[in-house]
Image (cartoon, rainbow, N blue to C red; front, side):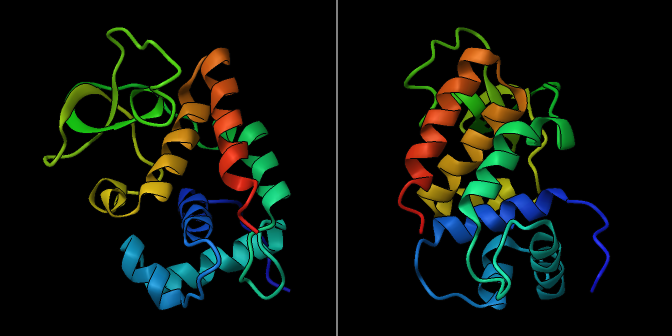
Length: 174
């Protein structure tokens, strides 16, 4: 059995993408192309997630309850986020749907830095470098990443809203 050397941010991204694909059959190469991650890294991600109990033994189905528990209780400690400089980018956390509909964010806007971005705000480091380039192609994937960023950086009220939104999206995942 392989040794588990700890989670990496791309592990979360790959699992969220699998959830966003819903019940469609996929290959490692599909994840590799859509996430701009090498096929070998996708394979490593799936191995780490299997050892951690976040994906089934065949590495095809996310263990939703375990993954949700990790996202809610562990994510902000393992992959914390701190707002950075004001940059142009793609809205995230409470600055994007589905969270922004519940929050009056005032002047606090969080973004992933991107030349293709539509808003100016404080930069949040995405879980994986390719996120700003790929997120616009898949609405559910984008929403899941927004929810995850809210959990990473939000205050108690925002995190509670993120938990509800996460639950809605994971309810029918499998």
